[in-house]
Length: 118
Length: 460
Image 1 (tube, rainbow over the protein chains, first blue to last red):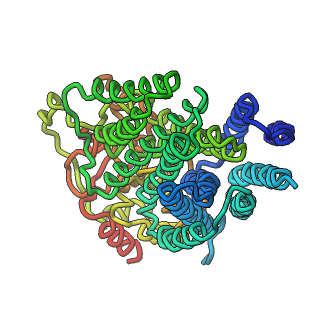
Image 2: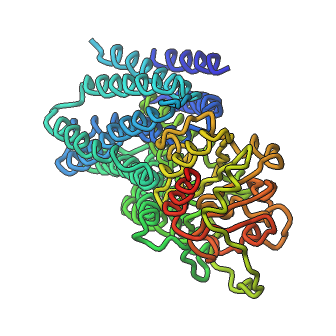
């Protein structure tokens, strides 16, 4: 099920990637809709045990805003927006680093069997 | 050569890896693979973006990436009991980034670039800044409440919902006006201010017990603000990753709402947990109490003991003592299981992580739906710092504010022990029938101390 939706998304994204000349809002909407459904199907299967790590992982993933922030900070369009862009990169990068590290730290703790059985 | 022919495939790979990352979270045995995939996806996204032709200088980007890393490492090292507030702070950063980028894009289009945005672009920008900035202040408020800098009880006043909703309505209206009359640019900063204010006001009336839902909802908002940014910047990776995050937040909030038998509207506008003025403690009932030695004796003779952890366990940092009790009982041939309610604690899955930290094997952590049919067979339930999630009033008392909420049937065990500081009603101010039941014995005291005494008594 999730593989199917994955392929769907991949197909949509790759055809969309072919022409990038001007914003094609229908394509963007397409990507959004398919990604949302993919997300719903995938997340539904996440074990309840892992909801806290899931949240810190999605913290890191939502820091994808770093992409827009980098473009803004690097374009040097005006000093005002460069400052705002730089702050945005700091905020996103903080989320990326702490999100992934914390998720990893928590997941290491989930053990199936007793570490030292008596 | 067009850089986009390189960047777009990189973005596509990144999007697929993000999906795989979430897919592998389905089970603890594959979850760590999910992190690797997520990290690679993010590195690809950043690497691809650095290739963009419109980037003229890397100085600030590099400085910002380093500063972000330096800030991020300590934030990942917080004690696990503080993970809810860290998560809220992280949502705030996400919202801030989206808001700032949105505000900058608008500013640039009006000043440097001198282009008139289309209605769609304006709409996307307005959505981005509203979502971004309301997530920013809302999450800061939530973090403040979780850190108890701000009172955790709901703060309400007359006409609160009307004020909040009209504030939000005005912001949306201003956005719509801006879509059709781009000349009204002064409306844009007004929208930002309204969004900032709305974020604060939205969280003020929400009590601590509702934090799991609110955090999940803010998670969804942070994702959606990234989606809006994607529409503004015409970036499909932003849209795909933001949508994954948004749907994750949505699913988690739905699970939390279901676990409390409440609707979104009720969580956001219901000010749950304010002390009901009418239903004061008129009825005086007495609860029976027992000593740790009594409890140890009964548990020693039991075949199955079910432990129900709650937020109180996190506050008392008692998870390691719970582990000692688990060891002592297991050694004596008692089967020990943990009954985890979906909303126990301050964020989704909070209890599972704390118990995993104390090295309790995860196959002992049982979800509410699975453990409830087994409860009548259990000899002992031990409630450690949980309250509303074990209140039998939710099953039958129609006048109770928590009526209809699914609970762990702690009362159905032969003997129930409740570790509690005092008889003060819990956070929601609701009297708990369980404490007065015939088969319930209260163990008064700090959870850590009581558990230590219990373990001690078991060893003797």
